[in-house]
Amino acid sequence: MALIDNILQYGTVAIAGLEKNTGKTECINYLIRQLSCRPVKAAITSIGMDGEETDQVTGTNKPTIELPAGFVFATSEKHFKERKLDAEILDISPWRTATGRMVTARVVHSGQIILSGPVQTAWMKELVGQFKAQYGCDIVLIDGALSRTSQAAPQIADGMILCTGAALSANMRQVVKQTAHICSLIALEAADQATITTTGNLGRGVWAINNPNEPTLLTAGNRDVAEVDFSQEIGARFYVAGALTDRLVKHILQTVHHPIELIVQDFTKIFASNEILQLFINKENKLKVLKKNHLIGVCINPWSPQGYHFDATQFEKAMAKAIEAPVYNIRNL
Image 1 (cartoon, one colour):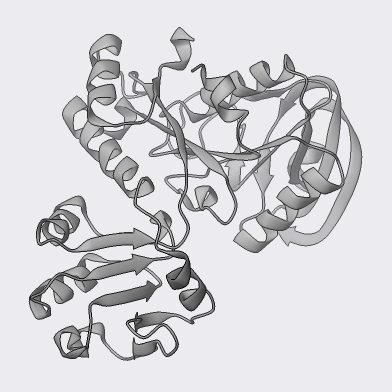
Image 2 (cartoon, rainbow, N blue to C red):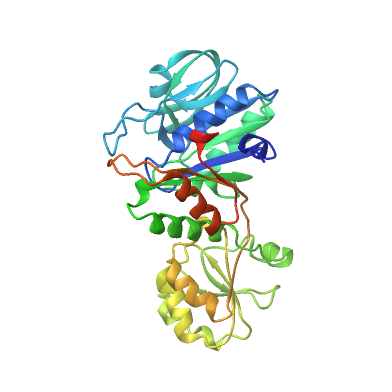
């Protein structure tokens, strides 16, 4: 299925780059051009800032974001004033970013824009709802920030596109391995509905949830996770309401000697390394999420701003072999 046809199945799509210069902006511009040819109303915003002509971190040139007439967008006051397009202001939010209030507008005459959107999940959810309810947008694109995938969390986006490439590493095998690891996290199985209901309102900490009516808080606040003897808990189901780290997984592996089920909110909360997680899985343990995301596809960029590049055909074949999601080279579409 063509990439554009694939994303049209989702109401909100996050485009996340695994590293700077992995082709995220080029992917976004491709999607914008394709959406402008379809009978849909579309909107776009960003977590962080994107659309600048020169990368703020690497100093390299990068493609600008081009919006056609009719597109709805949200950006900060500072970058709205610096726009290179004509737009009709629809709303000015009382919420503030470091570069001013959020301005929502509709493009009148096409041109370039720098996007700098909400930095908080709750605010982003509110903005996406506004795009759809007030302005009748059928699809919302969320542009990702530097090395972050939080904007792709299932609480915000229905689906996501992952952008990866040579900028991640000069070693093609390493790029494929790292990308496959992230894809495997996105593909984690969702917990059953009873567990989702039980853990939905739990505060931060590590919880034993073997009794769905009375989950037990094992560690929170200043109590070190290493003080918890998981092996003394009856049953084998635990919910981590926060970050899942190497340290926590290692501690569980050292203290629990029977298979367990470990549950996290969503894949963006997993910071444990691929090696540690494999040790965990290999011992017949299960890792699940409360909220599952849907990986629409992986877009690859075989070129690096450092001057080296991969063979595009070999890179695409290697990635397609390593992951189950569709793989796209935007320049070949």
